[in-house]
Length: 299
Image (cartoon, rainbow, N blue to C red):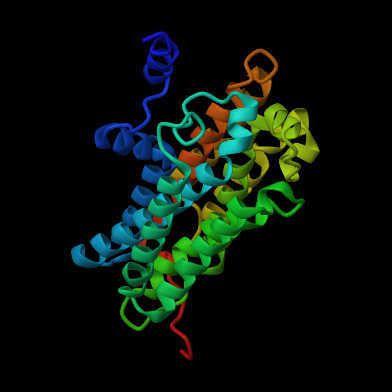
């Protein structure tokens, strides 16, 4: 009876065996639901705009979703120790809501599902998508702390137009400007995603490209790849730019400039502006539709 007090308090603070529903909710939060939903929706919409049928679009959505889930769970499993050290809230693996082994099991299961789902779009399309997923895993497993931390983002985003077009009849290659624009969007996403965490990352030994640049330089650099991607989508696409294209570029420039001006008052302003500029670029990419395809191999 005299030893019953402390164990009860410990059990109240950290349940020894969380119910299945709590674990499922934790896994949902640990998969980075915002980016996962955004990338899945973007790629599926791009597949529909490029001419892939409903069944193909469903396969694209399932493959991208599986890949993104695996990446998110891998990230939180690898970073659990650093997240605890940095005191980051809302991290279910770090706070014990989801066990590290459970997170790894979920990540590997999603990765295993991603393989056949990707290859269902064809060998070429599946291979490039799996290459993008592999690049993201490489980031999670160590490249995030190196000078080339931007490369997995560039590859992971850059392969998405190829995954879409190579799954079309005759497997046409994507247009070069669509691939480069998507890669630039990935670089911008990397900078914007890391910016709020730079101090905590440096304190826990993560010295990727943005961390080496420092918050001030990253804040100023974020709009550059995003605007470059938007310019490519307007100026390098077939045909002369129309009024809508010029208006989109003007809007992207205004948003980027506003984010820089407000950045000193609000650390979140550059991130919000970057998201808005990325949204403009995404709309421009979707507006190209079937134009993102180039000639099939050998044509």
